[in-house]
Length: 223
Image 1 (cartoon, rainbow, N blue to C red):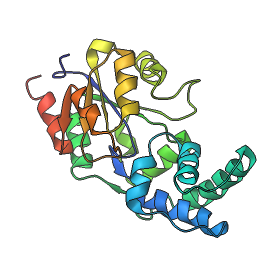
Image 2 (image 1 turned 90 degrees about the vertical axis):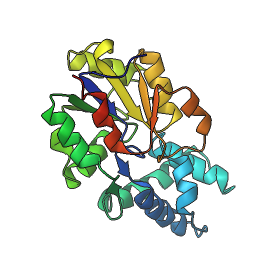
Image 3 (image 1 turned 135 degrees about the vertical axis):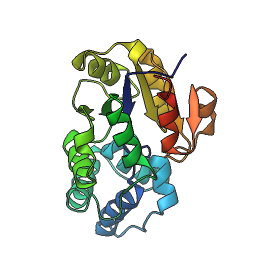
Image 4 (image 1 turned 60 degrees about the vertical axis):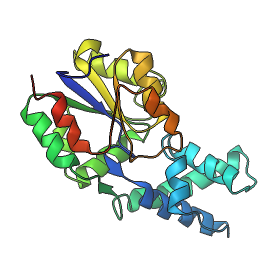
């Protein structure tokens, strides 16, 4: 599927635009400390990110063999989110070349949007604190629509909202949720290889795999 000269790029957030794992780790460990449980490592967190906060907590509990039920999970999530909301940009950083590449794309009339499984309010807050929110034309979060990634709905609804066609769009992400969402929506997918996934097989299904965010500039140079 052609990926050059597209007029619109949809971006995943965690693991694609921003290295958020350090702050996830900090807030998960805050929650675990409340229950007198041992902390998690940054490497562990990187493998559990990408499905939303509740799923992050659930995966943490399962991996650590900590007993929980739905009620306890709700309480854990509340503890996690209260800490994360107040400390969302303590250690989170844009990946290398992200801001200057987004500016370049914007200057070249590329429509930019965010399609994430992160809470919409938290996503807006984080991107604003990192001074890139103004570069995006639209942002879709975990609860913007009835379905989230890997369902194609967030992508399709974004295209509809911005009056763009599938032939004009490309998704940029780091995980199988991004891959499946893009495939379901019928648009090409570029995967970054520095993100949050322990499944390297997904790179075989991507239309392009990049190690440096600035490589996205090359997709529009001939336009």
